[in-house]
Length: 161
Image: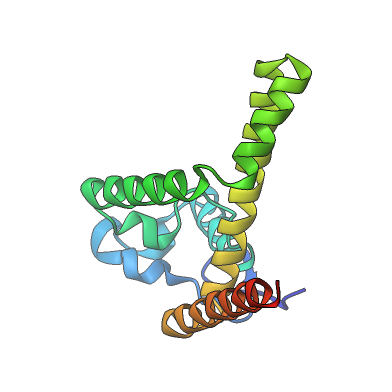
């Protein structure tokens, strides 16, 4: 648990490594002392929440700096990449077989959809966690090495047959 410090500029409590940046708002709203305790406490709680939890708020600082068209481009890129990767894979074949066997397509759809949403959430959460600890270039290198390793193992398995 992070060490908490009570800064004199507000009645809020922040982690020791987080300085209250309220003074940066002075040109916009006047002096920091003019802020009500409620506003300062809300700002401090948001800072504390995002400093300790990578998925605490729906819009991270990286998200807020993106334009609408950039967000849409990222969405479409992600959608089509995942859509094409999932076509014909074992998950789709399993879903097809479960639907044919159970004769309950909407229940299978709901279960498969919930599972895919959960695995996507876990992927995003781990990605946020890794992005804070490892440089993007290193992540790309590690992912490439893992894919090459998996390819080599699959090739070795085919050769052994």
